Length: 387
Image (cartoon, rainbow, N blue to C red; front, side):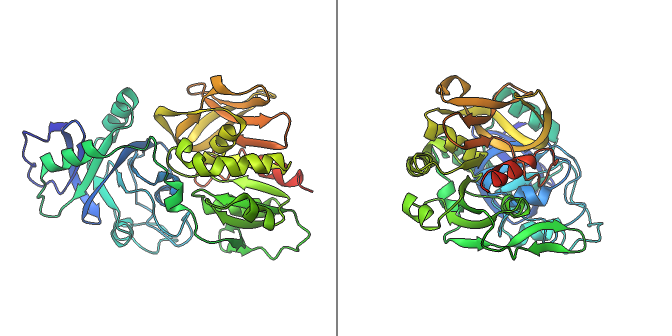
């Protein structure tokens, strides 16, 4: 890394990462021209970069992909988790090449440009990953200028003045604004997304959208549910108006304690009404907070499709997909909350179950897009329990 306050921009550099401490990493910019400030994290998945970029859980973040070849299969209209990308930008090792895949609709570079997202290539992503592991996820500015004109000192100041994700409620910014009946089933090659024409006698799940990946709703449909999606700000009365058989708490970005200011009171009332509850990622943290536990900011977070999680009931190990920078503090779990899963990377909590309610949650993503499919049974368990 170079010191942003003393060094000039190297010849040929059209993109840069500038850190709050004044250091900088140069490379070749692609995608949109401009700058964005956020938290730098890394993702270890070998596939699914388009799903990652459109996952609302990445709001406020810039993703370093550890897999070196990003963009080589282009983009398409199916491999998205939301209508728009929410990750602010990405950092990759190799330059983005021309796409080589029969499903390609548009090159990744062009897709990034059209969606206002900044990319940086030609960077030693292994070195960035090691730095994040040692020092934690830093605040940075990513910038792209085809002429290589950067005010490095000003960018460093911008990174230093950004408050960071701790204490930030981002669910309110990424949630859907209106209630909607979810119709899409899971995707199949050659068939696209099947439509759910389910009869009304199927179990009705009300899903609270804190920044959900679309594939979660598709998997609830696959498991046999009829799904209604409500915004993160839905009140208890609005939830119950839908006459749910069960309530689902989705993933999402930001600090769970901040989102919990308005979400936790609703969840507490749902639990008091004895409605079954299932939560994923941020939804897992929301359920834990509602039960009386606390959450903490992680040193580097978990992001990838290769995270081993041990199921405590029988010792089975699931390979899971994860994306979270906060975690439930295991030491604060009250007596009626039983830990059910634990990370084999760092021992952090990855699942809970309330012993006096029909409520459970996991920290990882069982909808598996991108990622393995070891954990679909959780959707089946939830929906079968509603019948």
